[in-house]
Length: 138
Image (tube, rainbow, N blue to C red; front, side, top):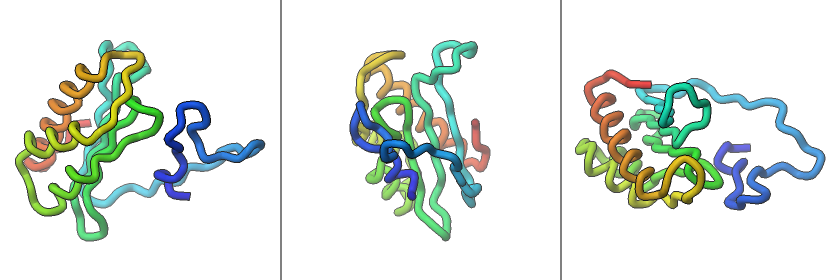
């Protein structure tokens, strides 16, 4: 099962598991190309993230990925911003603004939606700039 099909858009039954099923393996091959992962949390001593951000740059085998988690009932992708990267748009601020605009964030613990939008946009722009220079921050 693809990971995108594993998460349901339902806050009550959020995983595609049938009654009695359990998840026993998750196999994620290492992605080719350059990417970054950021876990943003208000205090470094907390395990719970305000959000996580994963970015993969476009590569021959596949297009780019921008995924934000811990802000909704499932991890969220920004397909329009990904398409911008795939088409060669390298203005980090423009791509970050597009990504944040298309994410459907839910306000719950660890900060209101508008705060999360601003912080995600700033982190995404920084990550894209670092990836452009060839140095990923994780």
